[in-house]
Length: 294
Image 1: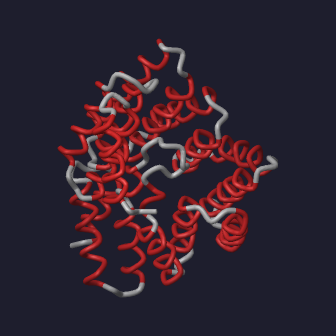
Image 2: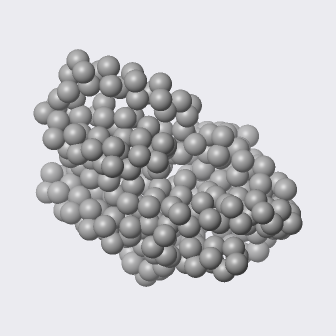
């Protein structure tokens, strides 16, 4: 719900009672991230990794540290953490955790501009796990990289499931594919119908990007505003306690693009600057933000 302070207080109470229970450190880490306190967040993940109980605690801590590194644009550090984490997960026969890290690795490569490596990591992820979280995230990377046929297969499989949330993600992906193909009307219809099945943060974000590409800037800004108001959901976007704080890094960039389209010059410059503060080390979006903010 975005009440990070309350979550941290409740978690700290549990930690005080049982400091060895690793998962309890996650809300503390996220609360520090929300406050921009990166060293404290790192300390919480380090404590999680050292905790005595909670299965796969070190694996989750590694993912959390990589998630934070991607948010900050430290792509090389994130890549190192994720490869090490994947190797440990494979040794532990933890396929789901390895798949989640391959997804984060793919997103890291996309953010840094390495398209081929992103495609390879995304394909590895969707083979390792059939969970919606992995399939959807992998498909989004494939869409971003232009591998539309592979993404379309995933979208069709999700759309054919019985669960409303799975079908919602399937329609969202179909809409994102239509957006890349330039069919904005169909893309909006698909993603709005996805929201009717499940009003999820990720669908709002993708719909915002669709409106932006269609030059419906006011509608895009509205969706990005909803994403900003619901950042608690973005911290674990699939509601599975797997940290995805990195997804918030680019939100100021997309909001600034919409503001720029509306002629809101001062606000857009401020948004681009916020994004560049989060991603000072570069990447394609950072380069574009620098040009737009001049």
